Length: 119
Image 1 (cartoon, one colour):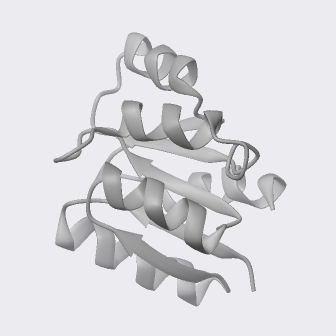
Image 2: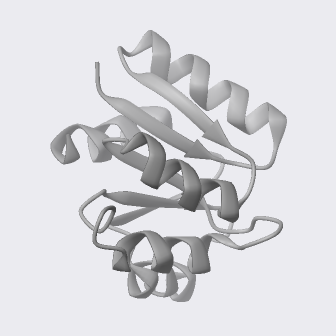
């Protein structure tokens, strides 16, 4: 089963995504902040990373830059997640190295449509 790293500091959002992705046939692992995300991307080599952009310790923009510039993790697709729906936030996430961007609250069907071609 494909492995998805969920990087989310909100327990409710993290648990909801994890449960729904498991029901859709994915394995999931979780990180609570950007620093953990970088470490887990290296140690677990997930197929896709769902990255909240507003995180403690290290934000999602910085974590994405680190993940997408390290040789061992640079090919892992990162989908940025944020409550910010303005186009400038999407552009900032893409500039940081995100493959795609999804606003919160997450439309799960649309998120699945973004994940499928990346696996």
